[in-house]
Length: 326
Image 1 (tube, rainbow, N blue to C red):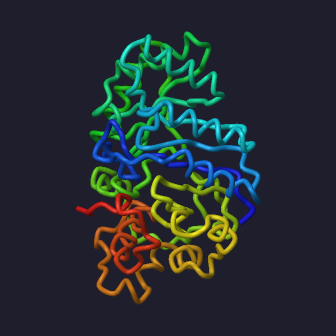
Image 2 (cartoon, one colour; image 1 turned 180 degrees about the vertical axis):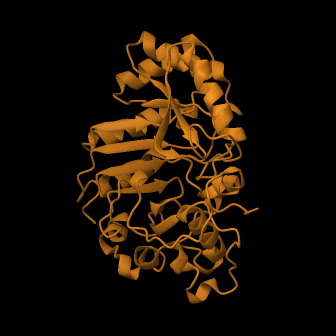
């Protein structure tokens, strides 16, 4: 694999929050963090044959351990990855002094924060005041950091989540800070978010579209992945919860060089027939399609993959990407 331009390191699943929409299944219950040695190994191997120009450090909440996050970011810079950013919910901004201190350290390390996660999902766990404190501290340092929100249905939709997110955005606007939908603009119905589908007002159907790639991984074609996730346990993912190997049990170089969609029992079907195709493979015997249909193909994909996970335990993982579906 020599097509990577983007890499995400999930350095922990520990988070200050347990957001309902989290496709990674992060929560305060997790405690394990990626070691600096593992991070350096992943970066050394990934950059050996790929020109990676962008990396994101996420959790969980990566800034629960500022020292480790900065150290891993510096390793990435050393391997020629010029753009390293950190996803965050701003929970660390307990006051202006602390917020300024952390932001100055990130600036000095040449790491960036593109936005603070601000919406109904995050604000049920992190106070608006902390997110506002982070934005104000950034502005004092000359940084343009606003809010990024996750939309369940549509920006003007009338449901409990999007209605509250609009109210939160208006609250920040009074302090002259914009809160805009992130990319992609809607909640992805994967992981924990699959159980939010009930609140989405979009028409339901049995989606039959194929899946060529995923924009959130910078991948237009699964045959030539543009991005990967490597998590704290070593799982190497081409899509949330779809693995091509584990870098703690097999050399990452071998995982990357041996990747072929025709040999992957899940990705191959997604390319050829989409999530509906997964419902037709022999291992899916007993899976029942919802009579009312699905919000979109991601919704169907999460449900059929959750059903298939016991049959593909080393591919459909890690476990926290596959919560119980209600």
